[in-house]
Length: 541
Image 1 (cartoon, rainbow, N blue to C red):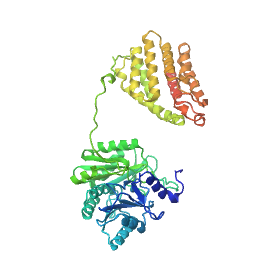
Image 2: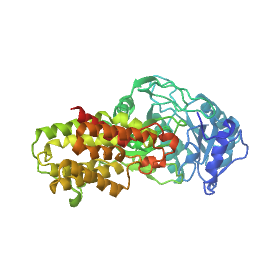
Image 3: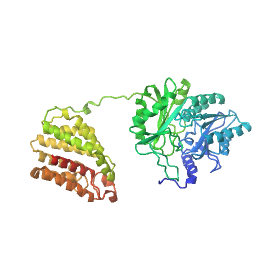
Image 4: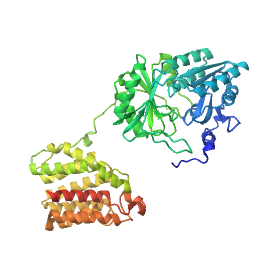
């Protein structure tokens, strides 16, 4: 798999330096590359308790992304998924710790416990006050005596950071950190494995499956489960978290493990708040990549029941940009549409043949969604089928309130439905097409002439002509023969026009005009194909 790296042996050092170059002078690193990789606050004067965390890299923005005012004082980085050395951790401690002392925040992995633990002993031998809290928030295997530390550690980064910034002493901070470590719970789910830089990707998760209870180092989860929807996935995560969640109100940390898109994280946020645990969640941190596992396409949920002071600490602003902040949970507020944009109401009328025809057209485009999307993916953004399918479902839902017996009004009504439900340029053009056709029918023209008028209107407004590789390449020849030669000849003309678009490699309109010839050759334009299959369906009855 191709990756934007130079040398897998310098991935971490180059990434750290890249971050430092845009830190606006607020951060620095210690000398000692490649073995010692420590990032620290430049404004730190050692007058308060220092907070040091870290571990293997590959979890960005953890941990360097949370170094700054109100959070960590320093982060100690190992190689990807590998604990930093004792020397590196000790260097981090000594560089930022003054007389108030230092708190080490460590995730519960053997390498981290040993290396941070031994560094703490050596720092104490040198006269430094050091306490260490080990976070084991993963509840995937509740019977495990040493549960893994995952994203729940971030609650400690934030709350301990707020306490340190307001002058709390080491024991006060460490005691709160210990309490949080004992009560926060986390579990994750992923649809895919991660890609370790410079190595081939392991493909162990079968299509249609998800991995539940996985760690943050690419290790397998506790089980593979069937995947259907985001809501079902969230419900399964909540099932595992609920027995471990404290009573009372909760704060949730929704963590992107690295590969989920923002729209997926928005859906997961909604699923979390709509879950049975939703009413207990008073605030949310994220959705953001916080404790990632490189490019893993998954998420984790951490739940914590804060005290009043914890909640105040979570709400305090911080310096690091990677921290998304605390967001109060609210319901979705819905206001009415502006009066002039309220959905148009029609005068419904009954005409059974017309109703049957519209229903067949809607069924055709609903069933052709995947096929048209696949075709559009060759030359566009892969959504032609979805766009037409959405329009078809909206039209089908309103079929019984349409003026079916008045075709002029019917075409106007279809235009209105499409303008409300169908996105993209195709939605606008088809709305214009049906509106213009309806106008012509109302003025006394027959259906064939009116359809030609609709065609001319969209050519005028959209600017496309036959030969430009759009739906017009199928629609125009079909409509030109419809009146005098019937639907069968029109279907043949539409099919011929659609098939010819496969040889048009220099598109002059539509999204295909932005695509190179090599991606267009041999594939029909999806809009023209949609017109062709519609006419073929009409001709087959």
